[in-house]
View 1 (cartoon, rainbow, N blue to C red):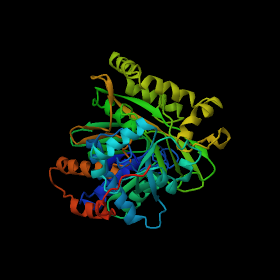
View 2: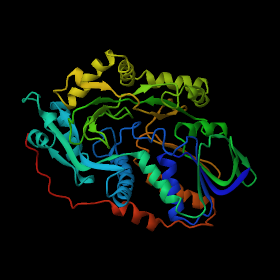
View 3: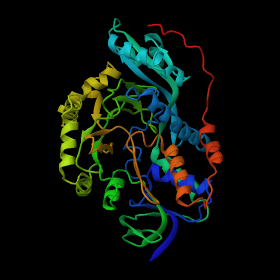
View 4: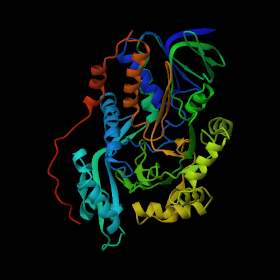
Length: 456
């Protein structure tokens, strides 16, 4: 059986679902299909237990440059606007305070410079600098038990969106399927994509799909499919598995980040309440390098080697990356965190940096939490490519989206939809104004207020 479509999207996570929503609601493309290999939408990395549930604006992520923060900010505001519009009952998200915390003279100096001198205070009008007393008002447990002589500073914003990306992806799909000509197939494992004279044949176990245009938004598997089609020869992946520790007590009111190292693409350890259960506080993520494309799925080890390819460029790239004097000890330390008992004890100082009074018995490894984030490797430069990867061929796009890919899913879908209109030779139209009206224009804004100096 062969079904014919104008566009086939491979991957039903947050990225594929947001593109389906954008194309279905804001273009006149007639026949669109979404293929997802799992039995339900957003069952892997977009599932709420498999990511940090953070909507990254770039305001408290201290490994972002100002340029990257500007890019991420617009994308985050698009998704936040969608959530404000579609989820007033806060079933898919919650909104809490969030802050990045500096402890000690050195960290405080760096955070002050970021806020006052590097332009972040101007880029984010809602971001405020808080001293010890104001931090204690918002997050008492962050200050309790800390040496009163230790300098503290926090950059805080009310835009602490905590998102269930799985439910958000399902919302995108539900909205999209209200339109005629939109079909969603779950349990549809893509076995291959073949170019034909008029487009592509997308092969699954049950049936084949003919598509004029194809977008592959299948996380780590996007590069695997791209390589099988002759694309992405200068790229590989460093799959990083994230895990969390849980504390049963409601220790934090919002999200509290620690400072991030600029050379690392991984999120800094932070603490926050779960999106659906404010009584559970999560601390993490850890970051362990693994030879799989999906956490805990040994069947994806072979998929990883499809991407790695066992060639000299890949081996040399890994050797160069992992020998870095910052990254290497970081990787070793994170391997320890997974060891029984020893790992919990080793991770405790990270938790105490956020909540000083936490003891070993207060935390436990979160079973069933965590996913794999594919970090892009440039095998020509032999280095990590800090960010997302998009490979564009003739009438086909491959998206590989590590963090903050979920946060910028709507901005990516905007860009991809514009590209799709080019692929279709302007046969169809994209209502970008309507898209922005339903997304970024729904984001709540405030006028910048004068920023007082924090009282420490």
